Image (cartoon, rainbow, N blue to C red):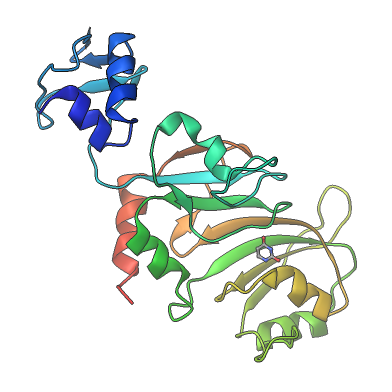
Length: 241
Ligand code: URA
């Protein structure tokens, strides 16, 4: 296939933009810079690089981001930076975050252009586990933990589903910390659950979603592609709904 068509199909830009990128020496095939947009490549054999990064031919892209605070979980361009802006170097057209974390929440966010996986992970029917590290303003009692675990009225039609709550060590500022695993994804759910036991979240970080765990080596704002094992586990545990 012509290299400009291939890059265009993979989402590197319009045909015109891609031709320009090739002419500017941004693309190499098997280590040699290619300057002709009509150059033919074999996707099964050739190693293609764009701006020094290997080009992936897989249909979909899957990234794990450690979302920093102050960034929106949205695709919409606006004055506030979005999680998609953080992945701008990837040149992927249709990336979207799988669900939302609040602007002040940190932690695991899967970002992909695989709409089917995203739909399955977010479907309310699937009850995908999400574990959060929750730092609290006030002490939490055994009674509060039981209420959170049993299901609690947060002002919606129904109580929350049963959850798992483990008391952890206080953080470096002396705030109590719990690890809370919920099986739904209601709006501001964790903060509202803690409000319902008259407490307040001072810091929130998501640690896992389904089988996917936040990579501790990723600093807030950093991301990486999912490994094959992580992806296989996610795809295998998410049947279509
Ligand atoms: N629950 C919240 O309250 N906020 C989040 O960002 C995620 C879960």
